[in-house]
Amino acid sequence: MIRTIVILALAACAAPAAMAEPSAATEQYREAQLVEAGERWRVLYEASDWEGLRTLYTDDAVLMTQGQAKTVGADDIVAFLQRLTNVGAAVTFRFKPEETIVEHGLGFVTAKYRMDIAFPEVDPATVVVGRSFLVYKWQDNGWKLWRDIDNLAPDVTPEDFGE
Image (tube, rainbow, N blue to C red; front, side, top):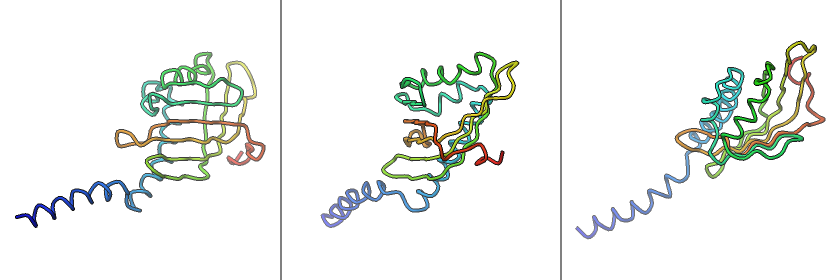
């Protein structure tokens, strides 16, 4: 009886440690989900699905884009992202992930991006290219954007996207 209790107690102590370290297969799956999270963001943004886009952010998310003040909180980030479509612009995005890393429940993505902005009655469209550094948190069985840093990068060109 005592031996059974000791074995169960040792197993209970070992179980949380084993569960804390995901398997290599789990890590690969979560890395693939990071790339999918970026694609899901793009699709929702281009569809102007602001409620859906909101679900991809943690409540305390932070957006830091080139030349803009820091935007804090998922609701304020979505409001910021709506500004171009609110003035009638059509916006498309393309992402090219360069690196994905999963560590300690966080996902890190470095990606090239291209943003095409077509304003009404303005030709040609404005093209912005650069690099993003995204930090995701694993929440509710999926990746949620926690930190989004975008910058202009001289080594990223429109030609990087097949144009």
